[in-house]
Image (cartoon, rainbow, N blue to C red; front, side):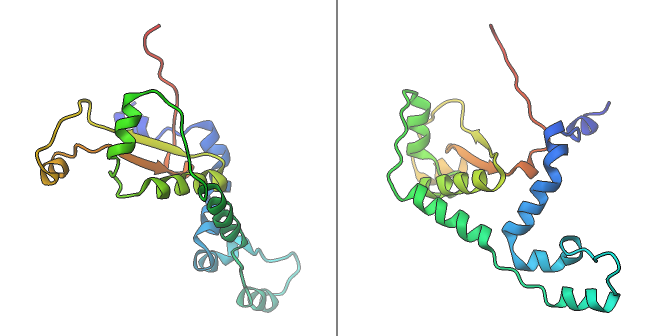
Length: 168
């Protein structure tokens, strides 16, 4: 098995939920996506004449209630201060210096809640320098990519996952 083919192996949960997650993604993106895929979401009824079906497709309307409700819930969740209890110096450093994706902490938390409410699952990747290095200027800090990057992925973007346990 080649390295590339190993990368294309998908997790069984991904295979099971992929179509549902794709539908959620289409709904999340809104009317323009649904309009392009209207035959997928509005199938022709058994015995329905082609002309009647075309008229039904032409009269498609969509109110994105899902997005409105998710936005409302995320606004409620993020309207009060968020406090995390932890004792790790890594998390102190991360929250003080994080700007890898140019998101504010509030926006990251909002996106985290939003993705979690849409898909029921969210993946986060944290990439931080292994050693905290002191930069002499912001330009040196940015040029050497000394800041941690926190990237959020939807379930459709992560096709395989697992657990690696090292040590005892």
